[in-house]
Length: 143
Length: 143
DNA sequence: TATATTAATATCGCATGCGATATAATCTAT
DNA sequence: ATAGATTATATCGCATGCGATATTAATATA
Image (cartoon, rainbow over all chains, first blue to last red; front, side, top):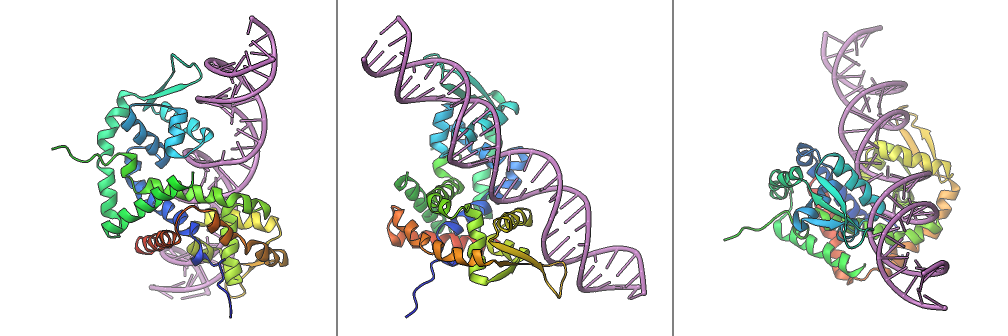
């Protein structure tokens, strides 16, 4: 009897996740273009809109990214005058990143994005919720 | 009554998919390092191990990537002497990409990767299968 | 209290992804 | 038959991701 060929693209777990990730990012593009943001920049702002302030390390943890990715992202957002950097008073190593007024204002324009995106996705709500649940479970289980 | 804040990281669909994708890629790293391959290069080889031959355009369609990503990938694999390029006889525009002997041989070393990876993932098989099913459904429904 | 270690960011280099554009071959509609 | 449209790849430029390493501040400890 012949055994299953595990090297087929269809058999992979990672590939459809990877392709789906890029596909969703592409779907965000039109809305993010309006805000002059890239998707990773939008993610950093999501955290700051929620937390008001965060260190580079906290952003890394929240976004599962490394400092060598987050530092340039923050620099970009600083150039766009959406966030500002300051050092912690208790620990001079720690960089405190917070929103500028422009960064706060942008939240209102961004607030319509999530529902607009959900609308544009062709998949039943319950399956999207299940996809969300499974990926979060994967993340928490494989740190 | 207060309405739901859709801008929370926890509410996003894309974010956990994006983070999961990168996390799985990181889990592949040790095995791909042994083959001196990056993850996208491995994907190209997966297609070729399955199809024996493909054009750049076919690789793009299969992998949901653009030519400006696939062309350099193929060039890299050519440099590593894993694939070779030739022009179609009927259509001089079309590039036929096929495996070299080294590329074919590499399949045996790669064949252990999928199960090894599944082993290293901390998540029940049925949920992994469901994650696979949902992401494939997403891809096919949102082309 | 000097010093070794650890911790928080930053820098460098390389490999993707992708929008925009260029190039070359094929097709198509006169 | 031939100019214009279409198709298949390739090139360019920019923005991530990330391994490896450097830098600076805090901490531990002999």
